[in-house]
Image (tube, rainbow, N blue to C red; front, side):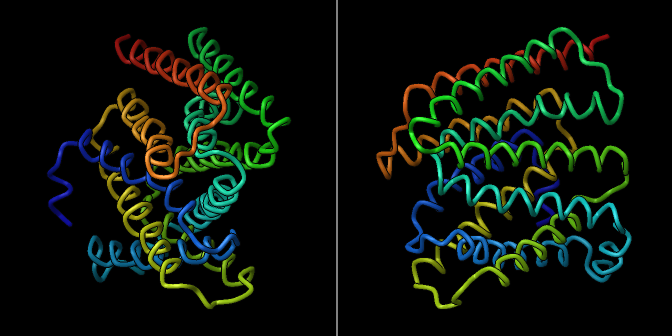
Length: 288
C-alpha cells in the first residue's frame, strides 16, 4: 500500500469520500433489520482491515504504535466508536440524504468546539456559516417531526458532534497517530456488537454486505482520507469531502428509488452553502 503515499492528496480524498458514500446503500441492502447485527458485521471486517493496514504500515512496530497512542488514542477511538453506532442507527431510521447532509455540518461544529475548548476566535463569516448550517438542520429536523424520522435525525447529529470532539483530542495531542485511534474504534465497536447481537447466524448476503461496509466502504475510505489530508490544505479537504454528501443520496435513488422529501433538499442546500462560505473563511485566514 506504499504507492498510496505517492498519489496526490486530492485524489485520495475524492476516492475516500467516494468509498464512504456507499454506506447508506449498503446498510439498506442488509436482510437483517437489527442495527446491532449490522454494527457487529461492519466492525468485524473493519477491525480486520485496519489491523492489516497497521501491520503493513508499521510492521514489527505495530504493537508499540498502539501502546504509544496511550490514553488519548483510546479516548479518540471511544468517541469515534460512538459515531459508528450512530451511523448505523441513523441510516436505519431516516433517509440517507438526511444523514449525510447532517454529517457534513462537522466543519461548523469544529468551529463551535474550537471556540469553547481551544479558545479559537470565530470570525463573522464563520458565524454566518454556523447559523446557516444550523438553519439547514432545523429545516430537516422540523419536517421529520411529522414524517416519523425525528429519532434518526437526532442520532445523526451525534456523528459530527463526536467527530468534532475527536478532532479536539487530536489538536490537544498533535503527535497522535490516526491509525491506532481507528484500531481502538474498531475494537470497541466490535465489542458493542458482540454484547448486543442476539444471534450470530447471518445469511450469506448479510456477510457480504458486512464485508462491503467494513472493508471497501470504511477501511478504504479511512485509509485514503488519513493519507490524503497529510498533503492537502484544510481549505480543500472540506470541499473534497462533499463527495460523500453528493453521491450518497444518488446511489439510493438510482438503486432503491429512495427520494427524500423536499425539505431535506432545501435543508441540505442551505448546509452546502454554509460549507462553501466556511471554506472561503479558511482561505481568507491563510492569505493573511
